[in-house]
Length: 313
Length: 260
Image (cartoon, rainbow over the protein chains, first blue to last red):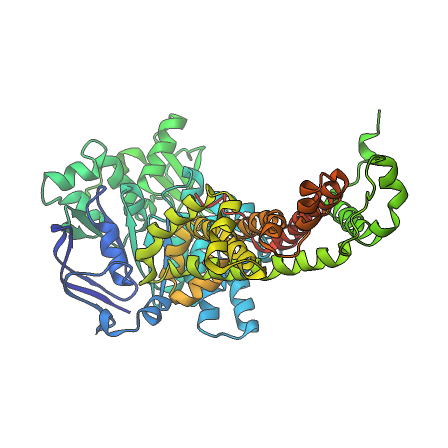
């Protein structure tokens, strides 16, 4: 499922909010719309399911102009999750998740099994949670239900508007990993809005950086960090800790060396990034770590000098 | 000292008991009044006729209830439809007007509505019905508007974004969420209406206000007391019945307090 923005414009009271925006989102991409407040990133997202209309240009969903769809049919084909979640307070968790499948006329059995499947996917036991009301859940659980509800009818596209913005760091990290897993497992096309650079670097297959309603730069996370097109990009991504951000994007796996001499005492998982490895070394006051796989097998070691002297190109 | 663990786990339901008591007292007074001669004679030794027997009290009660039922039903239907109309495209323009009317109407004394109705339609049941219906509209209209306004914006947004039609959103999101506030308005409207219907006796409608009017004009305090007790008991019973209704609906109409 593809989304194509062609020369999109949007005006609010005569002032341009979005100016001549062009963007092609391919099947299976996780595109993060990144930018400061007022950059128009949310507006762009909401145009896709026509929650906000565009004033100029065309948006194509799977090659067809979105204005040629019945608006309700279009929205039912796109999952939507947002920061304030918007669960129905008078309905149970199960009932909330079942909203779109019921609108699409699924039979009760199929709805029920889908609800259970999704609750498992988001690490919530259906027996425990399906019959609870939203006010009986924590903020993180509510957001999980919000994501489950967005995924309920197996939509072609997932639109997410700062869904994890209001959560504490621990819950947010857990949900980011859940989303990453879901994206890998389902291959869904996802459009994700955030102003959090780390979240963008972690999730995105492609980042679209917006400012004042225009695309400033787009590309893979590594490209943005290494080749910022102008000062705005460099400043927004954080000049000072650019190095640390780069470290967080690189896995240690290709840099594992065979053991020679004394085996390091401390271990690290083979799925860790440079950033995690170096952070480990700093806290433990060592310059090398023993790399182990998930089942505890020793794979080799990594050295601080190797990690820091690796070229990023 | 009472033992703390002896407390019942489930909260007792005082409304059920109180509703039963007030209905029983109401019926006892309505049907037992003709037999209460000795009691009221003892209470009011100076009155030659201490019990109101011109009309059977039970009959007045049923007429009172009938008048309230018809006028309140009319009022509720009119007010609810008018309130719901404000969320449609064409009705939206009338929302500020209705809000002003509803707010203004609350400051209007019920007697004034009756006083205005009589010169227009004359004496009898009809002016009472008209006045009571009009006066009953305002609390329900205000509650309908307040109830609809209480539905959190993110909930409406997510309903729209999931592809629910405006009709679906109205019946499955807005109406259930507005229900508790709406019901509170209906309750106010009906209870006030029971009191106002007593005053309707002054314009010729036969209600429980009749013994009060007759008693006042004939200096018979016993009549006033009997009429007033009947009206009060009826209003209390209705109020408790709404308590029960609100409680019965509670499970389906959770408050929206978690939707910031």
